[in-house]
Length: 143
Image (cartoon, rainbow, N blue to C red; front, side, top):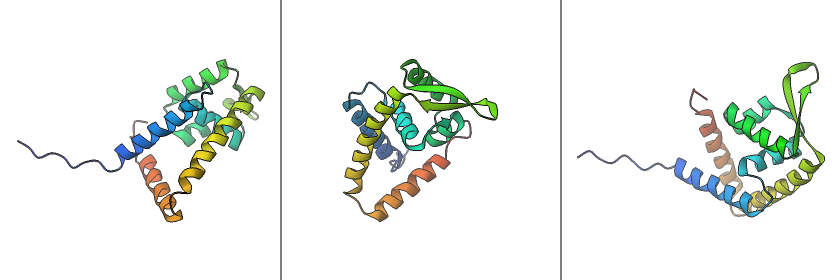
């Protein structure tokens, strides 16, 4: 019988934390999924963004991101335009309805971040940021 592999130390806690954030977003009862909420919060904080910028920010597969943007567009929360000077590049902007909802999502997520940051040190936060950046950089080459 072969020996068991060593327990994973990074992925399971990250998965639990991501799931907890998803449950938090759902508990807001705003009618958006976790992925939709994150994109709305990004757009309210960063302003109109290209699809490439959203892909870089969240790392979704292009087809997944397109589906999220389709749902947000169909709900009247975002609009797609073309980037001035480059008609091949789509620019995603919040509609007035989307901006109102994005503000609620962003405020709730900022509150969650503040509550968590109040429980850990600045060094803990810096270490967490370093670990998640390293995980993001280690993505599969097929992405």
